[in-house]
Image (cartoon, rainbow, N blue to C red):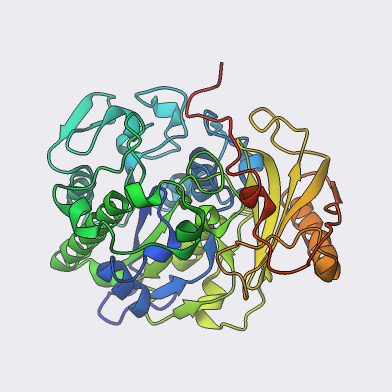
Length: 465
């Protein structure tokens, strides 16, 4: 029986589970622009430092479906198919008697529409592998179980919420697990723009600018209005979904988890929007409500979204497979002092082959300088590239790698990173220290940004030529 079943829910009734999943949403958009998500986080449980295990689309999604790192599933970059043998949340919930459904963007298949054998075990299906290529803001086309195209009316994120409400209504008399995967607030690829609902971009243009983007430039001043307009409409959709669950008497016994695949640095750290070691790329919203999470407060220790699958299974009273590399953070909901790693581990691909850890205070990152970032999933040798003191430099503007004042700190973090790489199933690598830098130890902007500007990247949704 799942823990903390609400008193008005009959005994032995398993909770429903809905994952609300956005694309490219920064962690710091939670608050004034998202009152429904903010309310859900305050009354439920919020992980205040949640990181993606890989700041790019398909790898992050593979981890969230399987609870395993992208290098373990083989989906270390975009354009890779989730292997048929990988067990997803849909398999685990389905075998426990749940109706399972997927709505929205998938991005783990090799073709469009997605063949049944590449749908990760989901039984109900209304999705597109690359929703950014089958739709635009007011023309949403996805495919059903028979791979027939379905055009949904309304603004794109509204159309997906409507479909989610229909799924819940169709399965209200049985336990269900639904993965609701939006494209927003991702840019529309072919026009490199963030198309918000009519009037929303104008409402939010000039309203807010994070300090990292204000300091480093990029495209945020051009795109932030549309981006926040998309975030606002997503939040309104979350409110409609919760209201619909309430009206069907399902809310008290439904776990709702809200998160994203990665953040957005708006072309400040390299030539696109993610694929970097910075919190702007890695840090995502993560909030949960429902049985086991209501009244849980804030988890302040770093967690990863690879930890979400085992957390959801445990919260539903289901066994967590030993093959999952993430670990349930439900003990932290019950007791903030429960044993938990002091750091979250992450990988970077496509822009570079990188590995890093993020503690409450420090960010430490190393790169395999000679490895092909598209074809090589992991390396035997890395070089220290970044060290940030997040207590004193939360926007990661001062890179301390190579500073003699922080050599001891870097050495300790280097050892911890090696241990986490091995724990993720990779061979033990050599991590070489950064070259010692001459000049002052403090107050210098990250030299990669200050001297050279954003690095070019080689990546894409399609394999490169």
